[in-house]
Length: 525
Image (cartoon, rainbow, N blue to C red; front, side, top):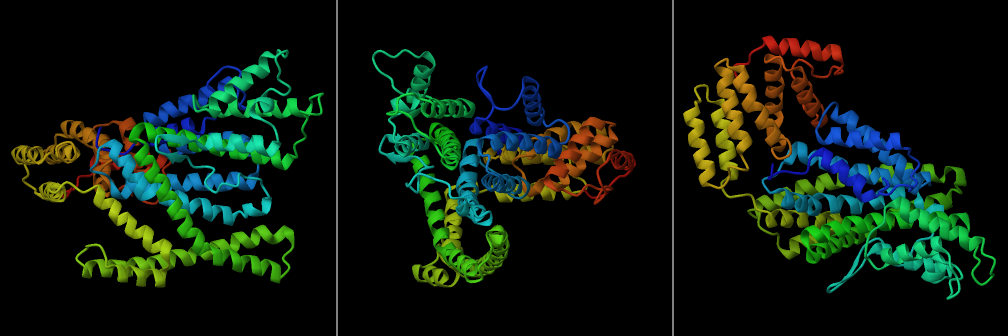
């Protein structure tokens, strides 16, 4: 598959890779033994191959990742906020796979997803969950630069987040990089471990390579230990626990951001990376301005009613839930108004004065981000004949006397339009339908299996019927393993399965569905 989104397995593996929590070298500590690591690797492999329950496999791996990040972010509230933000991105990805689909190649599909969905959602989720969990109350130290977790780009020069945070750590601790990692280093000193730590840190600082999280955390932990126990008062330092915790948290987040941004730069270039950074900061700043009043009102309530410290977190959580419900309703009202205005304007860009009036009523964040998404979609235009050829495919599917000759003609037409790679799943689905109606279930399954594999990460909402028909044909050809694989995909996407509906998909229920689908025939596919 070339015209598709990344698979679920690829996405979860990407999350593990960029988090850097699995050691790359023997001896790096992460709280896991060798057996645990082998289990995680095996689960990743099975998820990539989409074996077994997708929901269970994915849940197990997310739990493992959460356990590993808990070691990097031990503060419960920060860890929950981080986890909720990641899950928001994951849910957005699932919704796009389920409902929208793609007509772009994988590289462009990823870029479109980042610009239209991931960047906007991340900018919102970070602020939303920071307030929900009242992280400001924790009193963590962070770098003064509001963009410390983002690369700074100036021409061909890039200052990565990990360098920013390492510089801040040295400044905060009042020690140079050399003496932080090798306290008391001189021409006469000879300490192999400390010299190695300094060499590694210098390589990370200068962008020569990116460490795994176990390597980075171990290096800084050893540096803290050596500084606290140093015999020379000129180098000895004591670090409050809150500062130490703060440092490890920002190190983890800066390393994560550096890893992701590096991959974007390698795949799309510096110009695209800078564009994504600008988009993120704009969304963050638009939303932050609108949240100021909510923060002020909540703070005033806490102070005005002398809320005891033990109850402050509950107030922030409850007020946040109420605010975001209002936010959702407010946005729905805006979307309805915008839809009407766009229809009246023949879906052309709205006049400047109309945009200004919308901002006055609905706020800059909702208006700017929604109009931006419309512009982003225009940058990734649908191939001109794609909607028509897709509709023609569904018309053919409903045609009771549809034949291979009709499908051959359809294939020639989509090839002439350059859409064969976009709609190959439709062509094979049609051939499966023809054979189903002729009672040739073996041949129908052969085509349907290919159609489903091609449709999974590209067809969006168009695959609902296809998935059910795949499940039925797997039953009719007595393929239990394929049947369960189809069921798992349907459950993952939230697709209702004939004969199962709202029943729990346990073994007994699935056996019942399998048996019924072996017997049932449907006049209309």
